[in-house]
Image (tube, rainbow, N blue to C red; front, side, top):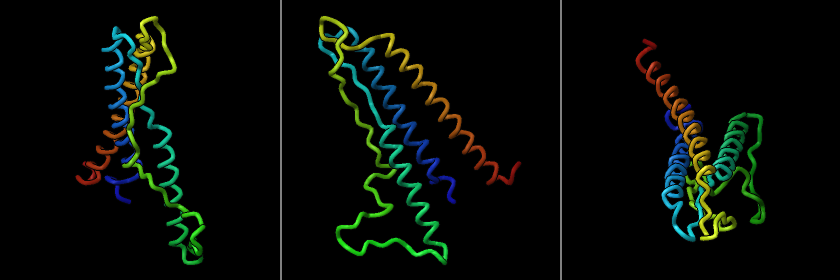
Length: 151
């Protein structure tokens, strides 16, 4: 197993990218709290990241099964068969798309930014980023210890 390009490291890196982008979006929302007709924005990458993780885990299970001498690999024998264990979206390809939420309006000027909600989202986002950063740091420290011989 390659520790640097493992699925766990890829997921943590992509999640940190998404959380960093969400931080920018929340900051933009707060900066536009007084802008008439401004609709708050958000980024939702967790669902796509989760699907990419499930696909990667499924592909890994198929690979492990195929490496077993007694197991028969799955094959598509007709054009209408589903591609088992294949997906268009890998962890690296999970989109970080910002969307405008037009379904809510809190004020008469058309602005939908609620400062208290944005501050709560910012705190939650920061906690998640710090947790992932600590996990990533621990992983790299462990790798460094292995390379240096445990000293």
